[in-house]
Image 1: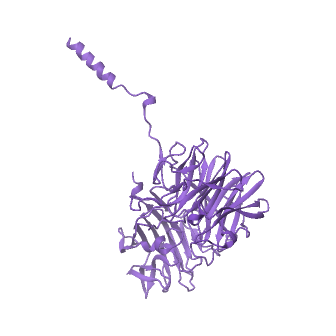
Image 2: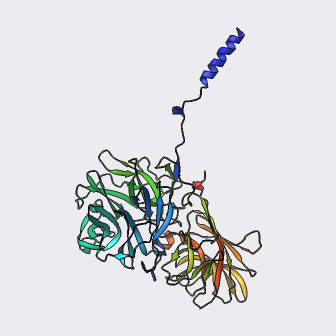
Length: 561
């Protein structure tokens, strides 16, 4: 009897612990992290071609302009080129850093890629084309008849159209920020405008409420409607995305009664880890029928302070029963993580643009990494890659000027991280400097360099202003190569150095004000870049500064798992 009881007990336990069937096993859904492009990648535009997705963003007065990214899944992006990478395509001399290439559009039609953009203060609206997104891209076809910004293309049959932000009717504003959305036909063979433009939207969703800065238009023909999606409210805390539709391409376009389809302006600014300034979207459909949108947004560290610039985010789109798209439909707040659009994990073999990552360049290639940026269009070759070094010629031009200094920049992708380099150069005259620059604009940057004061080699930190560079700190150093490191967290930047052979860095100055580098204080539309720099400060010099490596590490708390 005792054995029978034991057998029944074991049978009961065994039945209770039966392993679940395959259908009952819950598999973890792969997710991705927002932003999908961290740092200064604003105004994203998107298209699909040959089973892949392509994306570009604004670069303003940086060169090369308009990076071209490729992806299989909308999350894992690889930079394959730049649409504007030749001096013949754009001249940026004399421009403020937030002029130049504004808000591009990208499309693919009949085997050709089209990028349209506004070269603000340097030629206006233009088109470049390529059959390979990696390039080469054509020289710029300028369109002087297109008066405005933020153009995008729409193709239907054998006809081609440009839709763009433009002036109010008769160029008479009813209020500050009054703009229109207009459309005009163009000939894609001759790249010439055909006929007169027509106003599709005047003012915005409801002109009686004086909406500001209707811009960044995209047209999609979906089922029975033409949808016109635009940004509204200005690219700041009031930013939003709105939608219109029409049965006819030329309108009339009616706004959705429940606009906006995306905004964060109504949320508590003191919420943890906020995403703000969301808008300026573009959307695409996947093979499975799902729709997703890219858009710009900001991760501020306090109030409206941010140094990383406007970044590229990704969120799902859902259509209402009566046929209107809504971005981020299941949440009020833009999320830092969503399920992967493809359902498969992200490609971890590609260089990272999202989450926490490290970038290191030993300068062993024949050309600069595509991620680097120069200030404005170079008119001469002042850098060389040789002997596994990046060599910069000391030239009279400085980063204080609206010109093309010897500066090779890398975006600050994170709120917390560090950038470092090893520089070899022997200054011979005062004003000869080489090292790192933390750059927001010509008037707002820190210069962290090796230089000479009297006859003593010195490491020096300078703060720019409109009038003069102020020396914040300096220290005497021995001759020889010098490691320079800039670490940062939110509004604090720390500057340290190490002489050759030293194991530890020495702090030159800590907790330097980072809000000075923010868009809130400096103005403009760009984010911070950190990069290698050499100058002779207005004098002629035959000096060259050699950089053995450059490294960048980003480590934001929000991305830690």
